[in-house]
Amino acid sequence: MSRIVTAGIDGSQESLAAADWAAEEAAIRKCPLRLVHVWNDETASSGADSSDPETQRRSAEALLHEAADHVRLIHPGTQIEAQQVSGSPVDELREESHRSELLVLGSRGLGGVKGFIAGSVSLAVLRCVRCPLVLVRARPPEGTAPIRPAGEVVLGLDLPDASAEVLSFAFAAADRYGCGLEVVHSWSLPPVYGPGSTDVIPTLMAQTAAERRRELVTALAPWTEEYPHVPVRRECLQGHPAQDLVEASEQARLVVVGLRHRTTRLGGHVGPVIHSVLHHTASPVAVVPHN
Figure 1 (tube, rainbow, N blue to C red):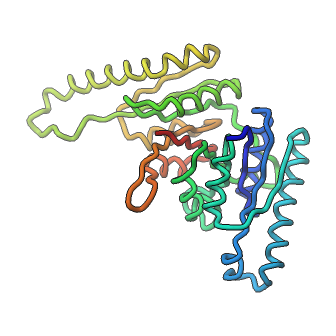
Figure 2: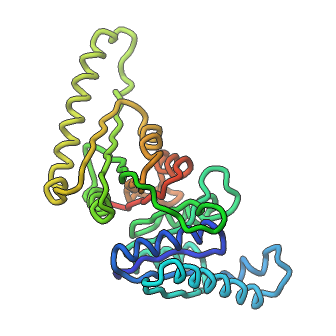
Figure 3: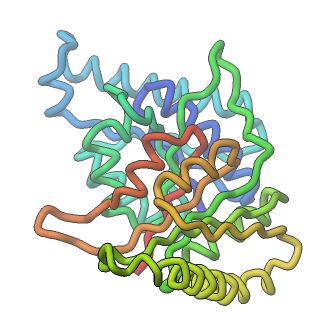
Protein backbone atom coordinates (compact mmCIF):
# COMPACT_ATOMS: atom_id res chain seq x y z
CA MET A 1 0.00 0.00 0.00
CA SER A 2 1.37 3.41 -1.04
CA ARG A 3 1.29 6.59 1.01
CA ILE A 4 -1.27 8.23 -1.24
CA VAL A 5 -4.84 9.50 -0.84
CA THR A 6 -7.11 8.65 -3.79
CA ALA A 7 -10.41 10.33 -4.69
CA GLY A 8 -12.89 9.02 -7.24
CA ILE A 9 -14.19 11.62 -9.70
CA ASP A 10 -17.44 11.24 -11.65
CA GLY A 11 -18.30 14.86 -12.50
CA SER A 12 -20.85 15.27 -9.70
CA GLN A 13 -20.78 17.94 -6.99
CA GLU A 14 -20.37 15.14 -4.48
CA SER A 15 -17.20 13.92 -6.14
CA LEU A 16 -15.82 17.48 -6.16
CA ALA A 17 -16.53 17.66 -2.44
CA ALA A 18 -14.70 14.34 -2.06
CA ALA A 19 -11.73 15.73 -4.00
CA ASP A 20 -11.65 18.84 -1.79
CA TRP A 21 -11.78 16.74 1.37
CA ALA A 22 -9.17 14.32 0.04
CA ALA A 23 -6.82 17.18 -0.87
CA GLU A 24 -6.96 18.61 2.62
CA GLU A 25 -6.45 15.14 4.08
CA ALA A 26 -3.45 14.54 1.81
CA ALA A 27 -1.96 17.84 2.96
CA ILE A 28 -2.42 16.91 6.61
CA ARG A 29 -0.90 13.47 5.99
CA LYS A 30 1.90 15.02 3.87
CA CYS A 31 1.32 12.65 0.97
CA PRO A 32 0.23 12.98 -2.70
CA LEU A 33 -3.36 13.11 -3.93
CA ARG A 34 -4.54 10.95 -6.83
CA LEU A 35 -7.75 11.85 -8.70
CA VAL A 36 -9.19 8.93 -10.66
CA HIS A 37 -12.03 8.78 -13.16
CA VAL A 38 -13.10 5.32 -14.34
CA TRP A 39 -14.21 5.25 -17.97
CA ASN A 40 -16.55 2.46 -18.99
CA ASP A 41 -17.23 2.17 -22.75
CA GLU A 42 -20.29 -0.03 -22.30
CA THR A 43 -21.92 2.37 -19.85
CA ALA A 44 -21.11 5.34 -22.06
CA SER A 45 -22.49 3.81 -25.27
CA SER A 46 -25.77 2.84 -23.60
CA GLY A 47 -26.35 6.20 -21.90
CA ALA A 48 -28.85 8.92 -22.73
CA ASP A 49 -26.13 11.12 -24.27
CA SER A 50 -26.40 10.79 -28.06
CA SER A 51 -22.74 11.66 -28.70
CA ASP A 52 -20.33 8.92 -29.71
CA PRO A 53 -18.24 7.13 -27.05
CA GLU A 54 -15.02 8.93 -28.02
CA THR A 55 -16.66 12.33 -27.57
CA GLN A 56 -18.03 11.22 -24.22
CA ARG A 57 -14.59 9.95 -23.21
CA ARG A 58 -12.98 13.28 -24.02
CA SER A 59 -15.75 15.08 -22.14
CA ALA A 60 -15.16 12.87 -19.08
CA GLU A 61 -11.42 13.50 -19.32
CA ALA A 62 -12.09 17.24 -19.38
CA LEU A 63 -14.20 16.88 -16.23
CA LEU A 64 -11.32 15.11 -14.51
CA HIS A 65 -8.83 17.84 -15.41
CA GLU A 66 -11.30 20.54 -14.37
CA ALA A 67 -11.56 18.82 -10.98
CA ALA A 68 -7.74 18.73 -10.73
CA ASP A 69 -7.51 22.44 -11.59
CA HIS A 70 -10.17 23.21 -8.99
CA VAL A 71 -8.25 21.32 -6.29
CA ARG A 72 -4.95 22.94 -7.26
CA LEU A 73 -6.55 26.37 -6.92
CA ILE A 74 -7.82 25.68 -3.40
CA HIS A 75 -4.87 23.53 -2.26
CA PRO A 76 -1.88 24.92 -4.18
CA GLY A 77 0.74 23.05 -2.17
CA THR A 78 -0.70 19.58 -2.74
CA GLN A 79 0.99 17.16 -5.15
CA ILE A 80 -1.81 16.03 -7.47
CA GLU A 81 -1.98 13.29 -10.08
CA ALA A 82 -5.06 12.99 -12.33
CA GLN A 83 -5.68 9.81 -14.28
CA GLN A 84 -8.50 8.34 -16.32
CA VAL A 85 -8.65 4.55 -16.39
CA SER A 86 -10.83 2.21 -18.43
CA GLY A 87 -12.80 -0.70 -17.04
CA SER A 88 -15.40 -1.57 -14.46
CA PRO A 89 -15.77 1.23 -11.89
CA VAL A 90 -16.09 -1.26 -9.05
CA ASP A 91 -13.05 -3.29 -10.11
CA GLU A 92 -10.87 -0.25 -10.75
CA LEU A 93 -11.80 1.49 -7.50
CA ARG A 94 -11.19 -1.75 -5.62
CA GLU A 95 -7.72 -1.90 -7.17
CA GLU A 96 -7.16 1.71 -6.16
CA SER A 97 -7.96 0.73 -2.58
CA HIS A 98 -5.12 -1.82 -2.71
CA ARG A 99 -2.69 0.91 -3.79
CA SER A 100 -3.88 3.70 -1.50
CA GLU A 101 -3.62 4.71 2.11
CA LEU A 102 -7.13 6.16 1.91
CA LEU A 103 -9.92 6.11 -0.71
CA VAL A 104 -12.42 9.00 -0.81
CA LEU A 105 -15.75 8.99 -2.69
CA GLY A 106 -18.73 11.32 -2.88
CA SER A 107 -22.01 10.54 -1.13
CA ARG A 108 -25.55 11.82 -1.65
CA GLY A 109 -26.93 10.07 1.41
CA LEU A 110 -30.55 8.95 1.73
CA GLY A 111 -32.80 9.49 -1.26
CA GLY A 112 -30.12 10.40 -3.79
CA VAL A 113 -30.66 9.36 -7.37
CA LYS A 114 -27.06 9.62 -8.57
CA GLY A 115 -23.64 9.57 -6.98
CA PHE A 116 -21.61 6.87 -5.37
CA ILE A 117 -23.40 5.82 -2.22
CA ALA A 118 -26.92 5.95 -3.71
CA GLY A 119 -25.91 3.58 -6.49
CA SER A 120 -24.47 0.14 -6.85
CA VAL A 121 -20.90 1.32 -7.48
CA SER A 122 -20.22 2.76 -4.06
CA LEU A 123 -21.91 -0.05 -2.16
CA ALA A 124 -20.05 -2.64 -4.22
CA VAL A 125 -16.73 -0.88 -3.58
CA LEU A 126 -17.59 -0.65 0.11
CA ARG A 127 -18.11 -4.41 0.28
CA CYS A 128 -14.68 -5.19 -1.13
CA VAL A 129 -12.52 -2.19 -0.18
CA ARG A 130 -9.13 -2.99 1.40
CA CYS A 131 -8.13 0.41 2.74
CA PRO A 132 -10.20 2.88 4.78
CA LEU A 133 -12.93 4.47 2.65
CA VAL A 134 -14.26 7.96 3.40
CA LEU A 135 -17.60 9.08 1.96
CA VAL A 136 -18.19 12.83 1.73
CA ARG A 137 -21.40 14.78 1.17
CA ALA A 138 -21.74 17.62 -1.36
CA ARG A 139 -19.91 20.85 -0.60
CA PRO A 140 -21.77 24.04 0.39
CA PRO A 141 -23.58 26.06 -2.31
CA GLU A 142 -22.07 28.77 -4.52
CA GLY A 143 -18.95 26.72 -5.21
CA THR A 144 -17.31 27.38 -1.86
CA ALA A 145 -14.80 24.91 -0.51
CA PRO A 146 -16.09 22.69 2.31
CA ILE A 147 -15.18 23.81 5.80
CA ARG A 148 -14.47 20.95 8.16
CA PRO A 149 -16.54 21.18 11.33
CA ALA A 150 -14.68 22.06 14.49
CA GLY A 151 -16.20 19.05 16.24
CA GLU A 152 -14.69 15.80 17.42
CA VAL A 153 -13.95 12.56 15.69
CA VAL A 154 -16.79 10.18 16.59
CA LEU A 155 -16.06 6.46 16.73
CA GLY A 156 -18.72 3.76 16.82
CA LEU A 157 -17.09 0.85 18.63
CA ASP A 158 -18.07 -2.82 18.79
CA LEU A 159 -17.43 -4.71 22.04
CA PRO A 160 -16.02 -6.97 23.27
CA ASP A 161 -14.13 -7.59 20.01
CA ALA A 162 -12.89 -4.05 19.41
CA SER A 163 -10.84 -3.79 16.22
CA ALA A 164 -7.27 -2.52 16.52
CA GLU A 165 -7.42 -1.19 12.94
CA VAL A 166 -10.53 0.88 13.67
CA LEU A 167 -9.18 2.21 16.98
CA SER A 168 -5.84 3.07 15.40
CA PHE A 169 -7.53 4.98 12.56
CA ALA A 170 -9.80 6.97 14.88
CA PHE A 171 -7.09 7.94 17.38
CA ALA A 172 -4.64 8.85 14.61
CA ALA A 173 -7.30 11.02 12.93
CA ALA A 174 -8.07 12.90 16.14
CA ASP A 175 -4.34 13.34 16.74
CA ARG A 176 -3.80 14.75 13.22
CA TYR A 177 -6.73 17.13 13.53
CA GLY A 178 -5.85 18.22 17.05
CA CYS A 179 -9.37 17.48 18.31
CA GLY A 180 -11.09 15.20 20.79
CA LEU A 181 -12.40 11.70 20.23
CA GLU A 182 -15.89 10.62 21.26
CA VAL A 183 -16.25 6.84 21.50
CA VAL A 184 -19.81 5.53 21.32
CA HIS A 185 -20.77 2.00 22.27
CA SER A 186 -24.42 0.91 22.48
CA TRP A 187 -25.66 -2.23 24.14
CA SER A 188 -28.94 -3.99 24.87
CA LEU A 189 -30.11 -6.98 26.87
CA PRO A 190 -30.56 -10.25 24.99
CA PRO A 191 -34.26 -10.83 24.12
CA VAL A 192 -34.64 -13.95 26.24
CA TYR A 193 -36.45 -12.59 29.26
CA GLY A 194 -40.21 -13.04 29.50
CA PRO A 195 -42.88 -11.31 31.62
CA GLY A 196 -41.88 -13.25 34.73
CA SER A 197 -38.37 -11.81 34.72
CA THR A 198 -39.42 -8.21 35.50
CA ASP A 199 -37.84 -8.25 38.95
CA VAL A 200 -34.39 -9.29 37.74
CA ILE A 201 -34.14 -6.93 34.76
CA PRO A 202 -32.97 -3.81 36.71
CA THR A 203 -30.18 -5.82 38.34
CA LEU A 204 -29.22 -7.42 35.06
CA MET A 205 -29.17 -4.04 33.32
CA ALA A 206 -26.91 -2.56 35.98
CA GLN A 207 -24.55 -5.52 35.76
CA THR A 208 -24.48 -5.41 31.95
CA ALA A 209 -23.85 -1.65 31.93
CA ALA A 210 -20.96 -2.00 34.38
CA GLU A 211 -19.43 -4.86 32.39
CA ARG A 212 -19.63 -2.93 29.12
CA ARG A 213 -18.06 0.15 30.72
CA ARG A 214 -15.17 -2.00 31.94
CA GLU A 215 -14.77 -3.52 28.46
CA LEU A 216 -14.74 -0.03 26.94
CA VAL A 217 -12.06 1.23 29.33
CA THR A 218 -9.96 -1.88 28.69
CA ALA A 219 -10.29 -1.58 24.89
CA LEU A 220 -9.25 2.08 24.92
CA ALA A 221 -6.41 1.80 27.43
CA PRO A 222 -3.55 1.00 24.97
CA TRP A 223 -4.63 3.81 22.65
CA THR A 224 -5.07 6.47 25.31
CA GLU A 225 -1.54 5.59 26.41
CA GLU A 226 -0.22 5.86 22.83
CA TYR A 227 -2.09 9.12 22.19
CA PRO A 228 -1.98 10.89 25.59
CA HIS A 229 -2.78 14.30 24.06
CA VAL A 230 -6.07 13.18 22.48
CA PRO A 231 -9.01 14.00 24.80
CA VAL A 232 -11.35 11.00 24.91
CA ARG A 233 -15.01 11.04 25.84
CA ARG A 234 -16.65 7.65 26.44
CA GLU A 235 -20.35 7.05 25.79
CA CYS A 236 -21.58 3.62 26.88
CA LEU A 237 -25.31 3.67 26.15
CA GLN A 238 -28.22 1.31 26.40
CA GLY A 239 -29.89 1.72 23.06
CA HIS A 240 -29.71 1.12 19.32
CA PRO A 241 -26.20 1.44 17.82
CA ALA A 242 -27.30 3.10 14.57
CA GLN A 243 -29.55 5.67 16.23
CA ASP A 244 -27.05 6.51 18.98
CA LEU A 245 -24.20 6.92 16.50
CA VAL A 246 -26.22 9.13 14.14
CA GLU A 247 -27.24 11.37 17.04
CA ALA A 248 -23.66 11.60 18.32
CA SER A 249 -22.32 12.48 14.87
CA GLU A 250 -24.51 15.54 14.29
CA GLN A 251 -21.59 17.97 14.73
CA ALA A 252 -18.75 15.53 14.10
CA ARG A 253 -15.67 16.40 12.12
CA LEU A 254 -15.41 12.76 11.05
CA VAL A 255 -17.39 9.62 11.89
CA VAL A 256 -15.46 6.33 12.05
CA VAL A 257 -17.04 2.88 11.81
CA GLY A 258 -15.57 -0.56 11.27
CA LEU A 259 -16.47 -3.05 8.55
CA ARG A 260 -15.63 -6.66 9.30
CA HIS A 261 -14.47 -8.72 6.32
CA ARG A 262 -17.11 -11.39 5.94
CA THR A 263 -18.95 -12.67 2.92
CA THR A 264 -22.28 -14.28 2.12
CA ARG A 265 -23.57 -15.97 -1.03
CA LEU A 266 -24.35 -12.47 -2.32
CA GLY A 267 -20.86 -11.12 -1.62
CA GLY A 268 -19.56 -8.80 1.09
CA HIS A 269 -21.99 -7.70 3.78
CA VAL A 270 -22.54 -4.10 4.92
CA GLY A 271 -24.53 -4.04 8.15
CA PRO A 272 -27.48 -1.84 9.18
CA VAL A 273 -25.37 0.46 11.36
CA ILE A 274 -23.13 1.47 8.46
CA HIS A 275 -26.12 1.87 6.15
CA SER A 276 -27.86 4.11 8.67
CA VAL A 277 -24.80 6.27 9.32
CA LEU A 278 -24.06 6.71 5.61
CA HIS A 279 -27.65 7.67 4.86
CA HIS A 280 -28.39 9.95 7.79
CA THR A 281 -25.11 11.63 8.72
CA ALA A 282 -24.02 14.87 7.05
CA SER A 283 -20.42 14.53 8.30
CA PRO A 284 -17.79 12.60 6.34
CA VAL A 285 -17.87 8.91 7.26
CA ALA A 286 -14.75 6.74 7.36
CA VAL A 287 -15.39 3.01 6.96
CA VAL A 288 -12.40 0.98 8.15
CA PRO A 289 -12.23 -2.66 6.98
CA HIS A 290 -10.84 -5.20 9.41
CA ASN A 291 -10.70 -8.95 10.00
